Length: 276
Image (cartoon, rainbow, N blue to C red; front, side, top):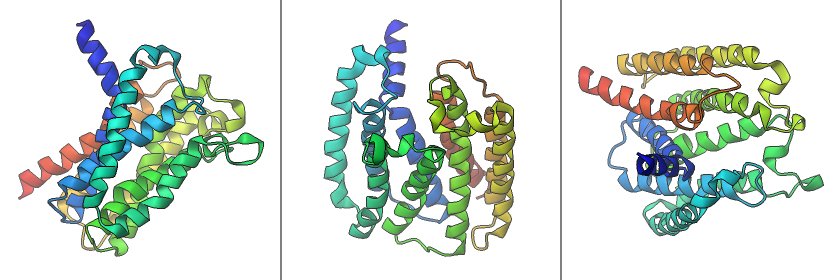
């Protein structure tokens, strides 16, 4: 049992789970836009996510360093180094245009932890913008870059999908903001710090309603599968948002909330099988 717990902790703390969540959103994008056969890009995204997230979480300049992880840090370092090497190797399979489009999001990730602003601040420590920086990066990596690589149609539906994905990611970050209330510096002025936990849930609910209603604006992508999958993932997201508390189980956010993108992919795949 202890061995299984150790493996699970490594799976979570090594950012494998969040990397799978990111890949799930990339695949949701590919399915929505009728693109198939992008296995190399998915692997590339997976390896990049592990590298980036472990860099953010365990960088010496990051305030998110957890002392309780010191025993497993060696394994996480090895995982991160191997992921980084393979990420660079598989970059040869990715279109040059897509790699160029990735640059701004890579820069944002680096600036998120490295203090290059006045008073030795990084993007994470700038007042009130942390959650939106994460939203922009995830939108770029899970919608824009995959479609550029696959030469997808960057039309009006693409624009709506970008807005929806941004709203979705911001809402997914709110449970983490609530969880970190007891750790975050007051100067960060996170949403729960500014408006409280209950109003944060109301704010997230409003964003999810907008996320859902935007589906009606789509043209070519509008279908029974698109409508049903969006309704279902909105409902699931609302459930986890309102289940968020200041004191929560250890893996409520890091496993269950981060599983929501994976649930979204499963919903889309299952509905495709049922309707097709």
